[in-house]
Image 1 (cartoon, one colour):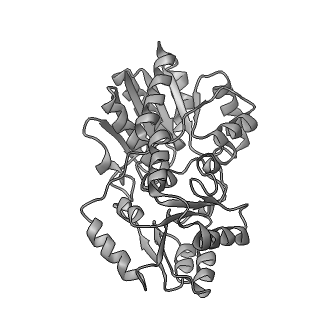
Image 2 (cartoon, rainbow, N blue to C red):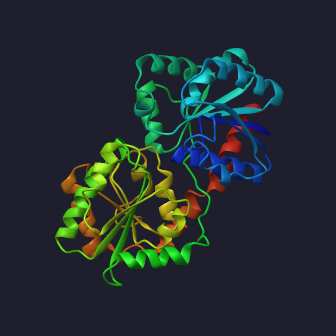
Amino acid sequence: MKILQIIPSLASGGAERLVTDLCNEMCRQGAEVHLCIVQNPGERDFGFYLPALSDKVHFHSLNQPKGFGWKNIGQLNLLIKQLKPDVIHAHLGALLYLYFLKLLRGKYTFYYTIHNLAEKSDPNLLLRAINIFYFGLKLIRAITISEKCDISYRKFYGLKNASCIPNGREKLYPTDQYTSVSKEIDSYKQSESDLVFIHVARYYEQKNQEMLVKVFNRLIDEGHAIVLLIIGDWSFCSEARELAATVKPRIHVLGTRTNVADYLLLSDAFCLTSLYEGLPISLIEAISCGCTPLCTPAGGIPDIIKHGETGFLSADFTYESYFSMIREYINHGKDLISRAKLIETYEDNFSIEITARRHLNLFSDTIN
């Protein structure tokens, strides 16, 4: 099977991480995979995940600036003509190109993964109407990434024809920086028994990091023996820099890291305060490392986390609810969930091997 994956860039984000892993694993499972990004990987962080891409994946780039470009349609059309793929699978903003490519290359099979709740992915009424047309007639076949996202698709578009394939992630291993990261984290602790919490996400309104900082500032003021590590880019906007300036001494804003696995493996709990989500790759990464999730009940998160069994969920999205849940974990829950149980949950449900196989089976059923 020959598959063409299209995504705007390989910037540091959950969808980009999934696509990178998916391409690598599809190759391991015998597919011929071509990955095309629209933007220039040498600009900004558009090529962030390029070093993680297997050399077995055929990589293409249109080397364009950020944003929609009409000439990109012609370049993608030419690429499809040259490759003659069995399946074209697009992500994020590449959906805009599929509308035109389907008209130009109608005989090809097109898929599009919706990486969030449908109403958050497509708030524009015109695009919603266009998607109802394309998805409804299966001119473009929709894939959702969690049960909650699938429900959102049905409600928002009034359609029941999406294929639900939960996100997956390659297994994470310690890097050659593991020992130095261990020493780094120890330097943040005031005692060996301090609990280490970690949050992995660039600054974004959806992630609700203002509440995260407020909750942990209060916990620190109350005297809890804790450390919070924040990994992600907080340097690109004034709001993020202003928030970083308000953190207590036990909170450390570390910026972007390429060895997130080391930090997750050395942390006790993973925090996510999102207002909405699809099925976060960072959450799957945390579970794969045995790091207990402490999350808001956003999107597909409750599909994974069962309170007290595979993590902890706040009752709602309020500050008091999230604060109470974190304090519950500190006082009573830190010994309830074993790392081995979380790793087993990952291996049984969210490994990239499972996710890639489900995609390949879906594609095979379509083209046969």
